[in-house]
Image 1 (spheres, rainbow, N blue to C red):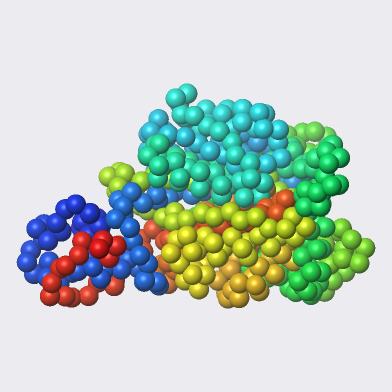
Image 2 (tube, rainbow, N blue to C red; image 1 turned 135 degrees about the vertical axis):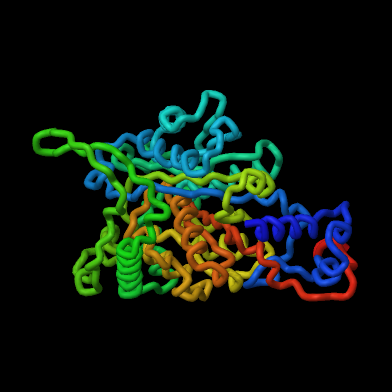
Length: 466
């Protein structure tokens, strides 16, 4: 532990722009470690900034199980009772004082805004937060959970507060209508505005048709998603990120309620195979290729992520699960909204000073197999690095919660993989024609000074100071 603390202090000294590094070390130490060539990791020559201690880091990320809407384990669980357990878990597992949290931001989509904002405030009280801790919601459709995390990271970086929570919540059992009830007649004069109203399933068919994604490719992606999710569940991987929820379930026949503990995703079908999927009829278009089997499931769930400055996490002795590196949102043609990740991922990587090839692990939301397959092919991704524990076709897609769920899934998998996995990306398409992506770094990847080399003279404070 002392060695780890010393290594972090060394790195912090490397990146102080106004202090001399060498006076705090012995002559032998100062001549053997050079901050000018000390790159910060093991899979890419990543350029650090001088604000290392102000990195925004994730110290905890948890989620509920993801359950089938109207039929699964959360069909009788209210939205605020979904959110409260993951908020409470962040406090219980880190032992931070809840009054220190500067803000809670919750991504959520289908519920009326004022209603859900009130429910989230109630959930914070259930979880033990005092009245002094504010909360708000954010809605960027399917990226809302990731947007919440990005908003909190940006506020911490800007100095608005030092600790915040980005979360996501959706009860599609309670709220399932995502369409606009009465459209403005003006949309007929603006084709792209009109295309914002297309059913998501039709946009999936558009992607398949425009970019040549076959039914077989889509069904194969679905099979892989279920197989990987089943394997992750069987091996206990998801236990690291799932918080059990103590709730109730009502018998539809007699209305009798019984207490249950929900801790396993209930949408996964381990026996999914190409033969059975081929029998399913197209769901949105008579001669289409999108079916109930190769699209994401409608689901209920929640997730929450605790972020703070690195310097504060070190002061509190909290383990660093991940580092928030960048976030990008890109607009695309609404008629093929599913291609969003193919545009957003390169943009987010570039913003982090990386290329797509530098990314070791991807969590790309499987809204529809058509768009998921297209994005992976367009970016020429190694499928052994993408959704390694399954995705939304198997787990489900509780719209506002998916981004937060993906943060938990990605960072815990990166932690398991250790030195072989330094950078990860989360991405999803967004209804009305957008894509979002965030870049994360494994939390302990900067601790080993593994690229430091002996030099005879220290001539720079850091690689970035000229």
